[in-house]
Amino acid sequence: MNSIGDACKPLKDEYDACFNTWFSEQFLKGRTNDSMCEPLFRVYQDCVKKVMKEQNIEIQEVEKDLLGTNSERKVPPKKS
Amino acid sequence: MKIWTSEHIFNHPWETVATAAWRKYPNPHNPAVIGTDVVERKVVDGVLHTHRLVSSKWYFPRWTQALIGSAKICYASEKSVVNPSVRKMILNTVNLTFCRYVAVDETLCYTPHPTDPGKTLLKQEAVVTVQGVPLNNYMEDLLTNKISLNAGKGRQAMEWVIGKINAEVKDFTKSTDEILHQTKKSLDDITSTAKKSMDDISQKAMKSLDDIQPLRQKF
Image (cartoon, rainbow over all chains, first blue to last red):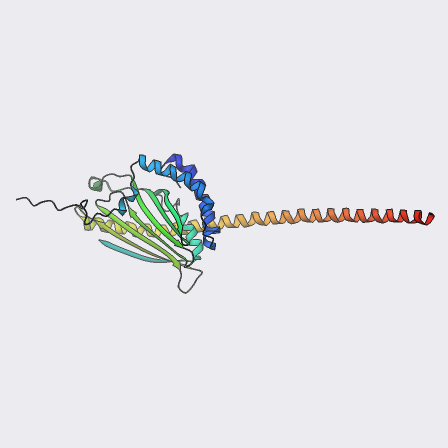
């Protein structure tokens, strides 16, 4: 599977492999400590966040409250 | 607004389906999805929370491009929770691109089958809202149909991934068996060598003792 940044792909592959093992071998068996893949995750994260910034992808966009705020689109004033 | 729901039963235990869900992409059934990136992930009170950015390539009919732009790569935000103690996995996906006109909110919920714990139940719901463009009702129908079609492909994809994982496990078991066999063989070798040396030692000791015996008698 690809990453948004080509440079992040090898980091993602390494992290994903670790996560998949952790998920089935540890997490699903009740061992919820997630430090196993933490170092790989951190390197991969740094890469993804950088690319997202470069490509202007704002993932928090969906969480913004719009209704009832000034950002809400207003009905244009009627022509008189 | 259009709401679409569906249910499906997988003939696999929940653990298998949950594992496969993480590895769903890439698969030959949903070539549109070209990338997934984890943006945030943490375990809180034994529950895994993940936020992923899903990139996909969409092909819109040419006439809609004037309305929603010819965005080739679309992004979606997928939030999920996995609770292993109650065996529940919920994924919620919302589109990020063309947010001004189209909102697609999709939820997938994987739980064990209520009567057969060896099977997994998938409940799927999608809410499609198209606003601010002409023929919005028609557009909503178009998208809902597309989601319905993609859901079928998604299930096929899951079965495909599960098949792949099972094959890997089989391979793994095979290699483990091989290692065990090799280890047993080496152990057998060591045991027989050790036994042989022990026999040698005791034989030699006996012989020396036998040699000593006449000497003692002499003095």
